[in-house]
Amino acid sequence: MNTLAQMHFTIIDYVIFALLLMASMGIGLYYALSGGRQRTTQEFLLADRSMSCLPLSLSLIATFQSAVAIVGVPAEVYTHGTQYWFIGCAYILGLAIPAHIFIPVFYRLHLTSAYEYLELRFSKLVRICGTVTFIFQTVVYMGVCVYTPALALNAVTGFDLWGAVLATGLVCTLYTTLGGLKAVIWTDVFQTLVMFAGQLAVIVVGVYQTGGVTVVWKKIWEGNRISGIDLNPDPTERYTFWTLGVGGVFMMLSLYGVNQAQVQRYLSSKTERNAIMSCYMVFPSLQLALALSCIMGLVMFARYCGEDHFHKLGVFSKNEMVLYFVMDMLQGLPGLSGLFIACLFSAALSTISSAFNSLATVTLEDLIKPHCPPMTEARATLLSKGLACSYGLLCLAMAYLTHLMSDSVLQAAFKIFGMVGGPLLGVFCLGLFFPWANSTGALVGLGSGLVMAFWVGIGSILSQTSRGTPGVFQFNCTAAQLSGNITTAIGTAIISTAGPAGTLRQPTGLQRFYSLSFMWYSALNSFTVVITGLIVSFLTGPMKEEDVTPGTLYPLMANICHLKQKLCCTTSLEHMPISQECPTAFQKDNSCQVIHTKGLPEERHSFLPTSRTPVLERETAL
Ligand SMILES: CC(C)(CO)[C@@H](O)C(=O)NCCC(=O)O
Ligand code: NA
Image (cartoon, rainbow, N blue to C red; front, side):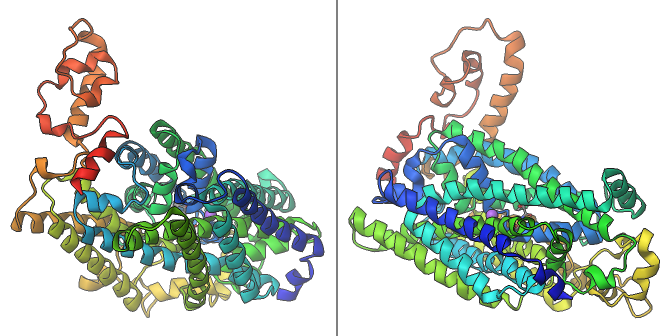
């Protein structure tokens, strides 16, 4: 069966794939030879802090949009309907909160690594623990990212698995090591465009071959693929509006708010305003990416609806379906399957390169520099190149470990984000919003967050109760065919969640705790960190607000008052005189706000107005 698709992977397809790799290498080479020629860490790790909005926003979306999403989301929509699409709701707060809370604090502190914040706010040890946690998260995630496209390609076309893994890993290591963050960002831009083009091409051809938009729509409608909003409050339900729209916000915060890969991009921006703008610009492209993936799943459904699933997609795992569909669809259209493979690998490369560069940054800034005698800029740059390269090789090893991974890579990626990213988000929130939190609290909090994460995470794997909502398996237009061949990958998902008599097994007690939807992992684990952190801080002597390093607290109350005044000042308070008592933080805004800040306690104004001031204060604070 595989040979059918294999035959149609022509020389043109290989050429397109090779072009992608070569163009990425070319960009790396260009930035190795232009500008400052990557001779300073400022250039290699922070692109000279000179990036503008558009490339930044396309690079931001590329970071966590890997082949995992490209193959995982359509398969999810194909088997379960469009419920997953509601994750788009989480993008609103998931990007607005980083833009207005995390970016201003990090940018004004003039950081290089996000974990420097943890030292400024807490202590060296918290910083190291944060860094190590991040490294662990990224290395595991990287393995999934390299392995996914290679495995899919291998399963469907017979393309050599380890050849593909090696090609991705090596090319990526090379351009990241040569061209630094500038190359990473500009290849991201190019690769994001290739990614969109590939998905769009498949959708257009798919719709055409299925018989046009009306036919596709009719089949989707009859097959019951369009899911209404599921407001079921049950937290063990994998995807509902609440798990996606609320739990998803916490996942987005852990990725777009505090993850080094993204923070590094915000920091490489020319101005703070620019960084905020680029974060907002991620919203439309992320919605587009989501829409394309979901529509592809629907087209896939329409294409095979009424045909025998067992012989079509049934034999493939969730991760391979999309590729099979694409190869089947694009037969006789040379170049298009190559474009889709390029799309898949673009998505993977852009994620892995961000991982290499951010890993090199934190290892140098957080683990090596603070504990070694001062080194020259040339030495530090050489070291960071060496680090980027070593992480590249480590990634190949991780891909090998991923060999043993679960059936859905999308689920695996979300679990990693929630289990390791969640506790990290918690530590940052603890520092930003709670002046009383001390460093013991942060350490114990992070530890307990991780324990909670692995308890639930490993518990869910061992007890195998991660329920795949069987209610949504409504292959109405093909019900007859499907029931006969239910031993497929999809079929086993239903069987595993049903009791012996075919009825649903309701988990109880600990089992129920283990079957918590992985979409809640980020929220659960970050709350665990904050709550334990606060309890331990109060027990061990809470910090006084005036002892906290200036600029590391987010003045939540002051900003809420500020917002209130902003809303009412335009109407009644226009004629009031401008007072000299205005705290500096608000001076740059409209003069009408000035008067209303009088009532706020002075120490709330730790939110410093310029990017320079905190740097000076930092020297004395350390
Ligand atoms: C993380 C989000 C939701 C947003 O960026 C999305 O890109 C996604 O579903 N990513 C899955 C993981 C991956 O593609 O590697
Ligand atoms: Na990507």
